[in-house]
Picture 1 (spheres, rainbow, N blue to C red):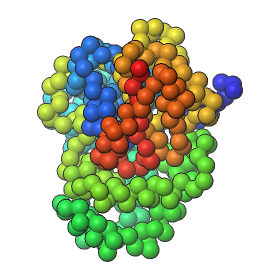
Picture 2: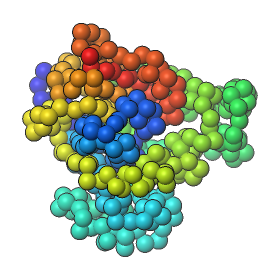
Picture 3: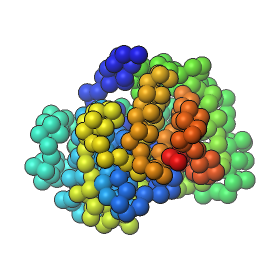
Picture 4: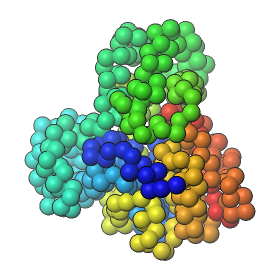
Length: 366
């Protein structure tokens, strides 16, 4: 195994890949049960869930990412929470219409680090267009919602998908109106490995995927559209409409704004991989939001990384992570040190409103 195995040495990180965190913060917070005094390690991504962790009063949240652009996305969110009213925060980030985002940016600019300031100075279009819409993955979703979905279903059917229904009605709707041959055909195309790799993610992100990507995701989509309410799912809303119209992600709900804003000083940003962080911070952590980082690793690198995480986990620490297309599970490899909280994992997974994933793991250090 060489350094070439690490994703930062195989994929380009010069743009916003994810303008939102596509992991459900509600189940993440239930899984980790963050408490006062906890030290949290969080994969930054766009920053949504690192900010969400602040709502539970941890001692510190260290948001770590190999992509400096993703850290800039979190840094400008942090500045926006600190400087803007709740209404202006929503408008600036792109949750609401706004004509003066660049003016608001000028009021935040001095709060940014030189690297983040340089990035956004050179990419003001990301600010003007609303930051939450400017990721590569969000572009893929908007293409699907704006151009592909209308070829599959008419406006009435798309509208009815998002109306409130009980579970039997959702199942009948999916079976009788949604699950058409056009739906299955277009999903097979758009969920193919080449399209996902080149258009939605990065080819290197798909390196360790075995078999076809489409069928398992399509099965999960069916579960998400039938088992869970569709009228108040912010992630589904964005996929279908290109915006968060009806329900907001956890970190920007009005009731969470004061708590997150009050705890911003506890959020620290770190540019690098987790092993780089552990070289700089020997204190250890109680809670780990690991997103789906193991998805992009060889099995050998996964074992090495998981081993390092456990070395820096305090007693009774919890680790939460998702599997999408690659199966990675820590507990079976360290049965004397880690136990999987199976019931909690399953309960959270059943409520996961981001239905791309095939598994959600919550592990506890013994």
